Image (cartoon, rainbow, N blue to C red):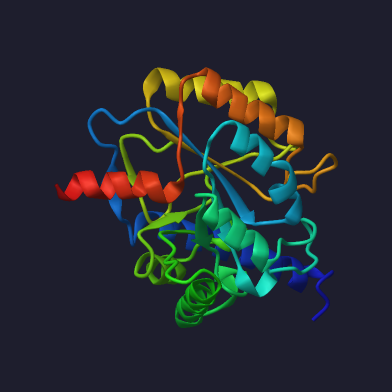
Length: 264
């Protein structure tokens, strides 16, 4: 079939409808409802997907100066590989981050697109990544997960949330009121999509009204990819959160606090 002809246009339109329908279904079903505990301090989590070597080199010093842990989502099948967001950090970086008190999260072994595989395949690949991480860092059991490409289907959501307590998506928002621990909202920290003023406005909103704000990015480089940010934007974002008095915490720490208070 010629994808440039009318049949191709129909196929592309059908695929778009399928993506929208699948995401809407995942948004409504398979939920793990949660609420922030009484007295929950306004909080921000910085997260890195994949994560490239540039994020380790350029974001980690900023976090260290702020005495702030972050969450780093790892696909073990990508470690050390070239990618559209730069060279992915190697296994020694994962170990170093864990030893420094940062959170290592799951991101599937093969960085799978949920739309392209069955739920069973998605779950087994996620479990394979957990096994690989446990061999890399003995005793490590990821407590949070991020959906690669931000793609979520109902099957993938159920497979992920059955294995990991907190799963982060890429739909923008702030966790407040009732929200879904199986599809946590998060905001892209990309140079092409976010400005310092935009970050400051979000941080001010959380400081004023409360809530849990999660940022995500990939590379942190002077000339970032479309899915990354510059070191200056990252540093400004951390500085804005600190200046507003927000707590900086990992996804696992916050979700554990929420779940612990709920079961008390």
